[in-house]
Image (tube, rainbow, N blue to C red; front, top):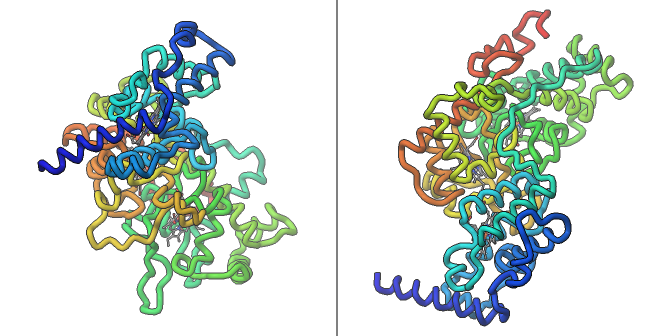
Length: 479
Ligand code: HEC
Ligand code: HEC
Ligand code: HEC
């Protein structure tokens, strides 16, 4: 105990010393004259210059592109400096990277720290005199984002899918719907996209790990990560937990040629799939109609599936009704949950129309999600974006899942290891925003998330039947 107190005092002293020695310049922040000359209404390039000065002087030590620290002082502070810089770089970069995070998420993160005055961290302002953000700094930074046209769209209603404009569009979507439910894409003719992304189960299989075609032992082979929903996936910044597919069309080419999922393994195998599909009259006719001479190929198959998936959007949840002005659409408990969701910063990463899907984020900023959410003997097969980019710094950065319809998509996380929404909320508080949460607050946030269940073609998702979603089970007149 004593020892750890001394560690702390030493660490503080060391960080303080680093502040003065390493930086060399006085951090009495934006120079007083410059500051008295600005007002929150300042606009144009003047405002930008002042905003840049604030960021440079108060934030860049940790968030700037050249943020660094001295190894000597880092050792003396028991690694606090490197942890600060590393944590800062992992959650927010002053130079945005649109491949990894939509500008909206960056803006919302900034908005969140400005509202909560969380940054710069207290351990930093204590030793860097004048680095605390003043109310004037805050309004200048806020205005900067407004002026750059940021919409700060925390939430937005889901827009219904566009009506097909032509017969050709209609045929392409119908074809995609048939293919999505067609076992011919798998070696044993049993596994379809819908096996793992069942539209009556929130677009998932409700399994921890998905079951693909049988392996040598005759048992279904299991995937390495939990299957995300196909509902509203069209809005994702990239597809898959690790982002290895740019869009829905590229994504749809993955499962058929995945030996564990649908069983094929090489591009030439599309020819065999095409032969099987050509035996179905309706499918053959639709391919001819939609793709003419291009025929049935990996390219046309995935194009049609993606067109169908574009229609899998789910407007008209209770939350959508609330956003459109019906203040009674949410219960008091749900409104409380929504407030917590915003105040705790959940609505930075989980923002936009689908409440997520638009950034990659580390799952171990405050503590490791696997420790918080997965059983001790969990065999991890996934390391996020790194699996795709092979860049070490992308390890453990996962594409944020959408939270629309999340009440229907248990179990949760890429690990598929958490069964209830309340528990998922507790894990998120621990790993993504830091801190614990009372049972009552976790329950109200979960209640808010249950208001996210929307409708497909006017039908509540939780009430959809196989006959309504699977064209092979419905009457020929459907659609
Ligand atoms: C001493 C280093 C340090 C300084 C200086 C610093 N930050 Fe941070 N910042 C961090 C760390 C560490 C994190 C990640 C942990 C956390 O969110 O608490 C972070 C996280 C953030 C985030 C992401 C928060 C979220 O909700 O995801 C934003 C935005 C941010 N900082 C903005 C700023 C701004 C603006 C300044 C300057 C006014 C600043 N920071 C100064 C260390 C720093
Ligand atoms: C055996 C089960 C299985 C089958 C069959 C399957 N998927 Fe998936 N799907 C998964 C799993 C598991 C993932 C997550 C994999 C990952 O991220 O590495 C996934 C990911 C996706 C995603 C990305 C969603 C997101 O949020 O990133 C989409 C879209 C998708 N699948 C659509 C399809 C389509 C279309 C088909 C049919 C061509 C299909 N899936 C067949 C299990 C399956
Ligand atoms: C810094 C970004 C970030 C913040 C802030 C954040 N999340 Fe998440 N959330 C994620 C990521 C990334 C995942 C996926 C983690 C994984 O599966 O490994 C996730 C997953 C989830 C899931 C599981 C969804 C599913 O389909 O598996 C829920 C529920 C959730 N978050 C709710 C919340 C709540 C509630 C908060 C606020 C307490 C919150 N999140 C804050 C990034 C974030």
